[in-house]
Structure formats: C-alpha cells, structure tokens
Length: 91
Length: 95
Image 1 (cartoon, rainbow over the protein chains, first blue to last red):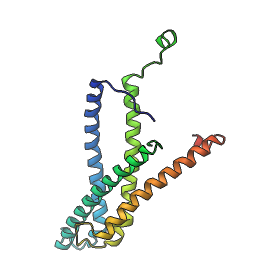
Image 2 (cartoon, rainbow over the protein chains, first blue to last red; image 1 turned 45 degrees about the vertical axis):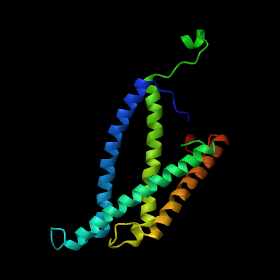
Image 3 (cartoon, rainbow over the protein chains, first blue to last red; image 1 turned 90 degrees about the vertical axis):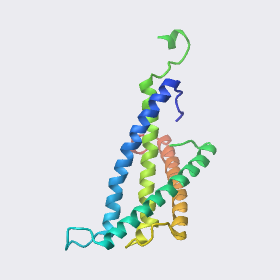
C-alpha cells in the first residue's frame, strides 16, 4: 500500500489525530499490563491488601515489561526497516 | 468530472487519505500488540513465577530479539501464502 500524499495542513491534522490515538493505546496497554502482572504476582486472597512480596513482584514485573516493550519496539522498527528496504512492502 | 475530461486521476479526498493511513496504522499496531503479547509470554513470563529482577537478563533479551525477527518472518510468510492463495482462484476468506 502506498502512503497517500498529504498537504501540510493535513499532515498537521493527522499528527494530532495520531497523538490522541497513542494516548488511547497507552491506556489500553496499561490495563493489559495490570492483568499480566497481577496473574503471576497476586495469588493469596486471605487478605484484601497487597502483601509486601506481592508489591515487590508487581513493581519488578512492571519494570520487566517496560524494558521488554522498549526492546521489542526497537527491534520491530529495525526489522520493519529491513523488510521495507527489501521492497517487500509493509503490511 | 475532471478525471474524465481533464485526463487526470481524481485526487483522494482528505477523508479517504486519512482512512488509508488509519488502516495502515491499525494493522501495524495490531501486529505489534500481538507480537508483544506472544514474545513477552514466550520469553519473559514463562520463566518468572515471581519477579525478582526488573531488568531483562541476557537470555530474555536474546530471546526477545529473535522472537521479534521470527514473528515478522512468519507474518511475511503468511502474507505471501495469502497472496498466492488469492491469485489461485478467489483464495480463502474471499480476499
């Protein structure tokens, strides 16, 4: 698929639109992250407060996911650049 | 009707252009999110019943790098198969 040519005004408008979309995506990803870390870290329901071990686990899990996401995004971009340069096009 | 009389292709309207870009954006976002889920599950979550370390260790990092490359390679392969299938008589999913 070829990217359509945008005028400068359209480019600006689209950029704003993308910014809104990114925020929406970040929120969605955040709720998914909570679930992904809750599953392995929180298993004890004899109390309704988070124990210190659970809290530590959630914190480390958050960091781990953040680091993982950053790395995946980097590699994704690198790989996509190679694919696009090989003339196979994007998606 | 300038595209008939003027001999020029009609320029897509702003909405049409935005719709094209949206589709591209949504496709790559979808692929990225799925890849993220699969690779984190295969490389990180499986080995961490209890998270003691926030940093990615060497094994996890290498695993993620390879996972991304393989996921995209799989995607490319599927795309090729899909194109072949649609050339050979309609293909699956009517695409």
